Length: 257
Image 1 (tube, rainbow, N blue to C red):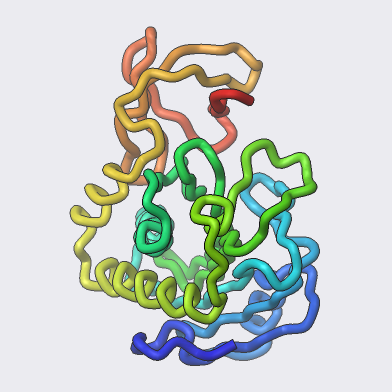
Image 2: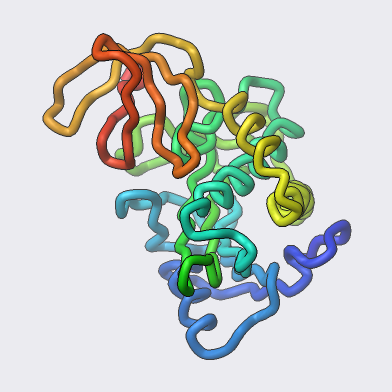
């Protein structure tokens, strides 16, 4: 892999790892031993035990996709506003995908990236807190680039190749991704929270569209996504009025699945 050319710090230090279970776990191990520079990336072409949200497995065919962890030190961000980091990362990836795919890109709350109703990127952010502020963040990203066949039981995976019929250089995609991630992270660091929140809302999957959802007891209900709260809860208009949901409190029912 070639380190990105057009960034100040994200990806300037890049560790290419052999086959590894989880780049996030590797990054956390490195963080416990020393303090790698901000923007360091730990990347592998063969991650065989990647995790997504709620301990879900992330399938990635060796050599076909981008699977890496990015190390950040967002100590300027209060712990109660840590969802802003998730929004910045999601936006950086969404804008990267827009550059390659001429279809609707959206962020399925809290931070999965979708092409229409198909999942193309997963994110797992593991934050460390110190007092009332963030100390460090390990940002795990799995972005499907050239994979054509998915063998797991994931219901709706896709890739840039499946959406465009074009094979892309992983170096090239990583370069663009690092640029967009850095732009959004610097926006966050500059305190431009309202712009980040507004942009994230505009990318929200199913924004202002009525759809069916499931509660933890498998009760199905109709709801319309309206936005997210400052702490990252999903705001949805239902028959009961405006409700807010935390992670695991609502499940999506995807069309055709």
